[in-house]
Image 1: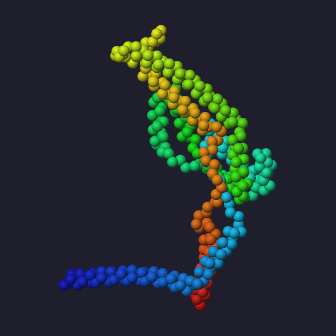
Image 2: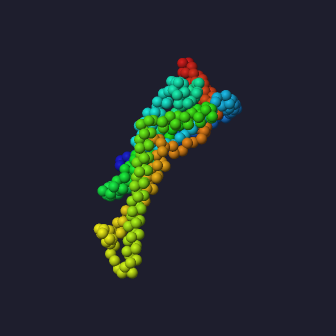
Length: 332
């Protein structure tokens, strides 16, 4: 009998505890609902005032946008050649420092007569690289297996320079379109006027042109050998011959290797012509953009920011009044 009574008491206590738990959960949901209801009633009560503040803020923002001059920019995508990346960043920082110091003398020397540099700016950062670095590494490792070949060694060097010299974006900021375009062009001309890198670029051009001429001479000689080989094949009247042939007073020639050398020379000429086209200046201009308005994010625009500020101030004042009232009640 005692055991049954104890069991009944334990079950009753468990039911009481569960009941209290459910009551607490229910009270919590009720408080949360009342809190949301108070917020809803607050906004419903002050709806007209909040709408009026939003309209006033939007009108103020529109007025400011008409008064404040819009900022413009030009973005120039560039690629440094001849390991001139360090120079590129240094010269951009130099120009930026002269703009901040309002050094009009410096800009007159490069052909810019701007009485006031306020509103002008120049920045540089690395453009996004969309290529896969893993695939590039595997490609270079594959080329390394053939580095004993002189032509392949040149390819490896060119590819390494291409992968290590990423594109960069120079941004020119200004307020007047005409002066901004002239400012951008003159500054880019100044950046590409470095004597040291200009001389190196000219030397590279001369070397590439000489290389093309030598390759063309070798191609002519190879074509002659192939022509003589064709004549020799025709003279055999269809007899089976090996790929290695002996011409008059000459050593054995491997015709397959001869064709391979010809193809390598053709590719080398194509590559050197591309270098001449791509590396005309120390800093190659990939794309010289046109003037565009500086776009701000949605919450950075005055038409959104100012109404939010006015509404926030109104709500803050109400919160302070409510806290002040509660403080007085506690004192009583």
